[in-house]
Amino acid sequence: MKNDNRLPQLSGIVLEELYELSLADLSRACSVQADCIVELVEEGLIVPIGREPHRWRFSGVHMRRATVALRLQRDLGVNLAGAALALQLLEEVEALRARLKVLGYE
Amino acid sequence: MEFKDYYKIMGVARDATQDEIKRAYRQLARKYHPDVSKAPDAELRFKELGEAYAVLKDLEKRAAYDQLGSNWKNGQDFSPPPDWNAGFEFSGDGRGGSSEREGGADFSDFFESIFGRDFAGASHDGHAQGRTTFNARGEDHHATVLIDLEDAYTVATRTITLQRPEADAAGHVSMRGHKLNVTIPRGIRAGQHIRLAGQGAPGTGQGKPGDLYLEIGFNPHAHYRVDQRDVYLDLPVAPWEAALGAKLKVPTPNGIVELKIPTGSVAGGKLRLKGRGVPGNNAGNGAGNPAGDFYVVLQIALPLADGEKANAFYLYMAEQFPTFNPRAGLGV
Image (cartoon, rainbow over all chains, first blue to last red; front, side):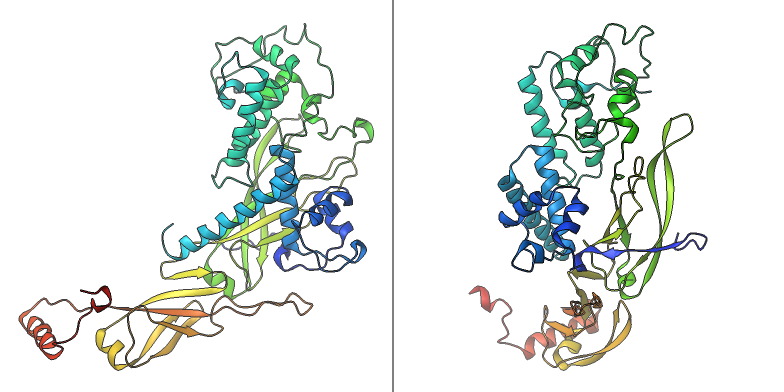
């Protein structure tokens, strides 16, 4: 199933390499109010480029972290700090799994 | 349709207290949350759990559900009793202040047959009650696409088939295969995500469709291992090639190259081919990524001593290196 020429060709953005989201863009992408995103930044969960909120620039990685953190909060009843901790541990597990794979253990 | 045993799904007894149900939900939600669990059926389990909890945490719904009796088995063919719904009146907003469940998840036919479509169709965020003017952005969809490592070295095209629920004219929902032709950009890495705007679920009313997120993974490769942008190959060499040096042909994902093995190489020695790992890419604003490197890890392969001549040669070698101790580092 390599290719099907009758279908339109779609190409998307690689999120991890997208650097130009504003606070409004990110809020819209996460379907939350801007305040929610500001809280995530205050918790240190995502660190945008730029000083003042209206100059903040977020990347696709921030967008992913924000979505996961908001989902964890909503679905598991944890607070922001808890979601941040869970996210950090999840990322560590992910990195360790990737190392194991490289070493041929998994 | 199939009967859903909500007590079994939540792993609680039929006489469980509301506190026990809440505790069971929290525990299972942590276990099956799609952002936490790597199990392939995690998303399905989590949806089932959300549905079970939506019923059992609500005293009115739980009482109605209990009226069906305890003789039903999970998965058994079910149709609601003819006089169903006669004696019940549900209050609140249907799904009921469900800040604790996955937004926009579809509840099963079974749920809808007992509690009605209005409940299942209601928005989960309370303030969108007016159904006539109800506009909502469609749900985002997520899928994983496996590509070969070689595909990351070129611009690859993949036709992927996604299962997505579709409603027919009569409102029956079934899973339909949905085909998409997607360009995978050069230099993509495992774990990266591609967003296809507007390819998620259609919106409600004037709402925009959701987006489709594709997570990229690499198929396991027979020879290569990948770490971020770097690619590793274990290369077996003969003892004389390692000791005396050699020029060898080595496969890489974008073709065979000739590699010079230096004199006096040892097992585990690493040779780097700069820039021959996963290619770099350009994000358009100078924030691109450099290409990874290709590492050849040397492994010494020994010829078998499977004949008189070979035996004699190994003995001769032992005589020639009387002081050689491969275990010197172990202190023995």
